[in-house]
Image (cartoon, rainbow, N blue to C red; front, side, top):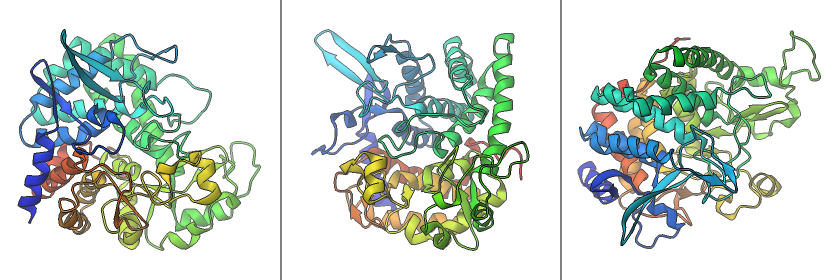
Length: 456
């Protein structure tokens, strides 16, 4: 069955290629002939293309990936403003499209100026940097990374992310809707997914930046920030039953260096379901953390990338896998993998999402199941030496995805329903299946991603 499903997935991927001046430069988001969603799904999104790029690199077809990396960097040179404000150097577009008219072709980028809520994508520059590193690892083509314009781009990303801020945390402060959860979902502040990508980006950019006097200071700052970020996330974002018990007994309004509850988390602020849901064995990195705030929702992308990019310890990696095994129906269910658990409902939904109907409970970003998350799930399982979980999830997707027309996402507590507003022939759903299959066939592809740099 896998071969016919793979053929279906490849047909969608191959039909989605975007060309500019007779060069392939990316893939569109969806090939749904009915196109139920916004017209920008005919554009190439940076975060969406990453999984397509992984397939092309695994297939020994790096040209489109190289062209994509060059094209996105070229777009950063456009003089663009959002609502009158100039875009900061280092920010990369969420997506781009090729416009054709009688005078020829031109590229038009979206830096958030056409996005819902006008939010610039913080994750785009991080995905670009991580993909550049994977490209170099896969092809050995370090010449691309050493080109002056690429080096300037890497330095601009580092300089932007390492800017001083009015806080003492090593995590990166960002607005709501600036990453895969790209609509308002109450994840403003320091969402886990951004911290995982930030950690991976700090490693990869430090490795690719030339060690000349101009960049030495930035690289030294990146190394210090990476170490501080790793220790902070491993300690403060981690939640298991032992840690939950500590939080349950926290004292509040503590002052001084010896404070146990340094963020002044009130135990009463944690939702009641967490005490029943978290198993005796297992744990995870919480979705967000800030002064007086611990968001205990489980966000799959952040946890899986934390494993894949070396942010978690080996023990934490195993406990996240144990959590998936113990809470399989909640976190995987009928279609791998649920983006967020638990969904927010009622008054909480109105407050956090602004009554967003697309993010209704157990749909889209608010507890929907996303096939694109199959690839980081399989990769994380293999890195954790839990192949049984990877194969179990893959076979669920293999049985249903092609038959259902490669939906963008699924609805319901266990993901049994095709998403009410989901596109079909979603390219990253198809590409994720292909790359997950390749990982299972060739686990050596995991070498493209950073190892756990510091063990426990």
